[in-house]
Image 1 (cartoon, helix red, strand yellow):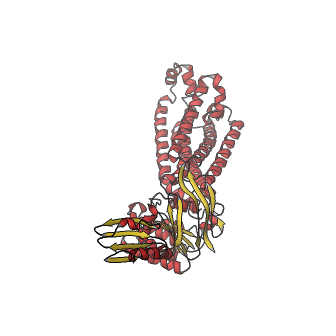
Image 2 (cartoon, helix red, strand yellow):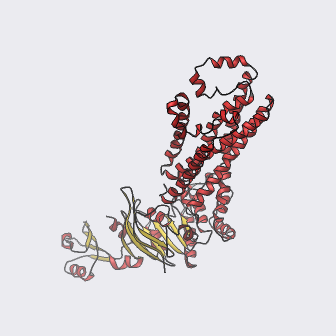
Image 3 (cartoon, one colour):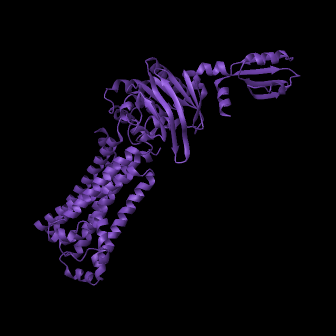
Length: 264
Length: 290
């Protein structure tokens, strides 16, 4: 409990900064949306763009003149923001002990390394959930002006569930890399590169149907906002895949961290 | 009982040597000196004892339990002072100490304040605002507050001013009188000589000597100095003689072996003055390192 509480306290500032970034992002998005709102002429401009571009940007599936359609578009950007935060928290919470040379303190106390990983993972999880809740509330607050209906709230809740699962996937990946990689400097950059590569996969699968298999390697393709909007469902297969990644990531984290030499 | 039992402990970092086939024992209640220059493997040994790193070969046990398998359990009774102290910078000293104390089942508050008083530590400052020496003081209080049975000290006096060093030695000796075993790693001979009962000398990852500190001084080497205009230094190039040097009619060397050999040799020549004395630990040490 003491490690968990200390980590929460140490991460408050970082959580605060991510909340500000998210708030600014929503504010900018809503400012843009106000131009599309009930304005089909603006959407007509968009439809002139090439089809692949629209598909890659996820614009096609949504009616951008409604607030629900707008959030359908925002989903991808929310996903990027929240997963980047998750993967960075995951690696950082583990590697900072080696980076700041505090392992000679924290791991010479009578604690097992597994306990340290568990407490830190839980603290990072709390951070992720807090940022998600903040995003949820901020989304609702900024939508109120545009007459959100029941469909909007249902869609938004489903989005949040999908975002939560994606956060967990990248948090686990981050923690795994933080635990497994002895070179702490490489861990964060590897984690971010991995995230961007999988995001890139999600874009090229949209451009070329031959590359459809790549979607299994990109958590950004696991949850299709159009399906969440139109059929109110998320694909259970990808929930399963996500759970498997989380379990494998955490198992790998415990195994490698308890076995390896700390970098001092 | 042996508090620390190290047998054939070896650590390689890839191909780089950490320590190579080290064995020694530390008895309960003694202050054991571990001496060697930088890079000899002192910190590596301590980090292996604390299970921060894993041995390539061999094993180490503390309180009769394997350091890796029972790490968290034996660390309940260990106080560790690293050579360079790093804590969470943004915490206050008092919060850091309370945090550390929260990992031990006993209540350490009284002892914590007592130690902070002795070391003249300001409890309400942030770690990041502290000087190197003051961080070291935090380390001393943190390492001792849970009344450990074994102290692992890695170059503990670096950064402390002479007054604090004296207080620190006093503290260590008091702890030792109460039955605490101390493992004292250092490259400063004076402090080892002052505190320790036994000493192991480590060089390039190997232990080259483990001995009682008095035996080391008394039985092994004699420092011989002869004065006289006509002494032929090559006459002393005998087995057991080392560091033979001569200048301005003086001959100096170290001798290990039967002292009578040297006495006979001296009596066969004419000297104006002769001294045979115990070398300081410093001199023994330098001898080992060349």
